[in-house]
Image 1 (cartoon, rainbow, N blue to C red):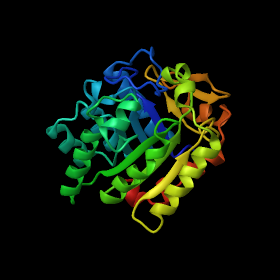
Image 2: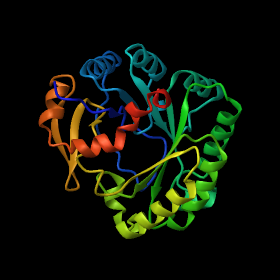
Image 3: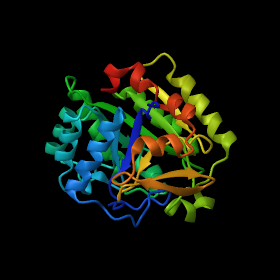
Image 4: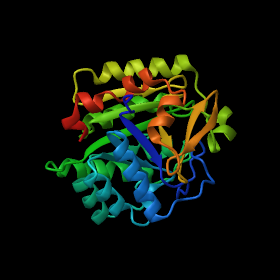
Length: 287
């Protein structure tokens, strides 16, 4: 059997409780029932995929998410979640620290001013910092912390301030994303946020140099390598590939074999391997 992707991103809901104008979530995909969601996890685990990321939308809006996380862990998967943490109570945070392998936080500015310009809610930066502080206090936690940063024309002068936060707190991974207008709000706000490839790469190289020799794994996703390299499941179970700025339907995870979709879908498999290979090389860190 052909080697499967190391990881899959499951946008489990298209609902969100924030209104980021740069977001490229799909807005109108119907959610699966709880039992169907468990079947998706069954199929992912049976396919040979190593890591599952719950994303969205905002995954904390999903009823029963904690049970799905535990179910995925019982199936032997490395489990990650990407969240804006608006609904993250202290009790829920403790649960995720104990049961996730990775918690990914979005941070596009080091203070409320930059985050507001990026159109996140005004309390976002403080919320992320508070979670990082709590992570510092939980030295025995199993869960690793990752930060995702969308780099745009608006915040390009402020990325180094985020690097200072990354270096101060226990951040295992930091990933920079070039703003990319694939779908949703991002297509409508392209002129506001778009940043050139040259500007993005210059920032990325500066941040790589700043973090060199430190504890944090640094990576990037530019507008070129986001296409055909991410294995993504949408809320209704559809698997689509992003190519030439558009999503192309390949099949539904509940009705078509995942291995077949990966084998015939036109993915840039070497790029996916390069982007996610650390999962196998550093499995102790990844899970």
